Length: 486
Ligand SMILES: Cc1cc2nc3c(=O)[nH]c(=O)nc-3n(C[C@H](O)[C@H](O)[C@H](O)COP(=O)(O)OP(=O)(O)OC[C@H]3O[C@@H](n4cnc5c(N)ncnc54)[C@H](O)[C@@H]3O)c2cc1C
Image: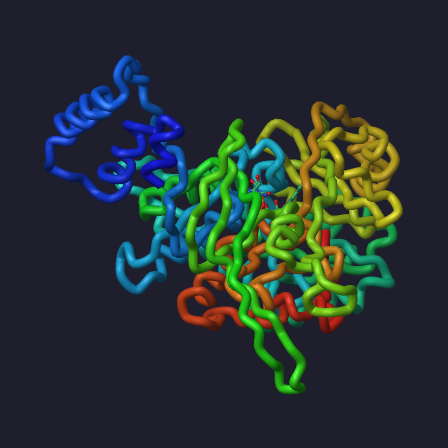
């Protein structure tokens, strides 16, 4: 390493990194020592000028117990909980590798910021219940010494889901379960709906469910930055670079049927540095795949899905980027401050954005309409054909509105069953997933981070059992289906 560093001309940064910043302070006179070393090098290389030396403090460390791929809300939440739950302060070294510190294409900052407990699976209800509690007490979890408190701008106005005759009985069943799990959700008849929200046209609505507590929306960017600030204060290293390769050791063994199984363990992660052809190898014990919409690609780097079809080795992580649009409009006569996040029977949705009669909304496309995820261009026709007509029918004042701006972002879309993937891979035994939430990953990040940290530190889920979310289901063909995907 020393020889390599010298060949590359990494003088000062190399020394100071090894001896100072990263591994604790020192009282020795390193400046004096550096001068001596400099003189020695000059004496063996007569005539060569002393080059200014590069600062390598931006490089990841050579070893880290845990390497987290992806510094979005899920990766940072796992980092937070690993440090919070570690037995002894400083016991484990955690590195988060994020390739784009501006997060220009990451889902977290482009999301709508919604949180709800109106799901059909107990796991999803529990995850969002805990997250609501986490958000409510955000400054107890994420406060840092001398830092200003976080203002999440949480609007606890609830989700209002509308059901047609066809969907009413499922809605009733779901709400019963949500209540059993502890969520505060009520059912409303069309008449009750008209009384409470007179701006809604209830034609075609048979039933509505409305969140009375713990539901609404908040500022996703604030949560992301709050987590970043907190984990850095806890000693987590966040480095800018792209994970491009995993180096693994193999272990062949026989299963109960006498068939050969090859287990893999990643022992080195290659991090390609920004605007450079170089990579930095990082030795590690555990890798967390929290690469969001790109986590399928990251899994493939570890050989996941690269075997014969129909085998466990050939089973891919079915998570891919799916483009979703958010439109912002102004409507002077639009619903006021009491308006919840409304999801129409058609699937189109909207919520208020601030106090000035501005609104955000959209609609997920059908499988046939899925746009090309190759870029983040917005399709404005989609608003005119798919979003506006149903919303204007439901909220007649939206007949007159003016679209102001729009953006697109990627869902970390699980094509198998649109639910999260949590836990280790059965063959690449030290790669853990925290991904695939298909449109509800922001709100579940606080609880999912805790679940993954429990698995890594204690070998099992301790607070919420997420066995239904593990990778095995893709191989076994057993879906963990959630009916309330928006
Ligand atoms: C339009 C839209 C609306 C949404 N609305 C909601 C909502 O209302 N409520 C809700 O809960 N969720 C919502 N979501 C979903 C939510 O945003 C995501 O589920 C969540 O943000 C996923 O977080 P993440 O950390 O996994 O992904 P990201 O935020 O995308 O972070 C993943 C990171 O991994 C990095 N990365 C990828 N590959 C590599 C690599 N090889 N090396 C290094 N870094 C890498 C990327 O740069 C990225 O920053 C919405 C999403 C969209 C697009």
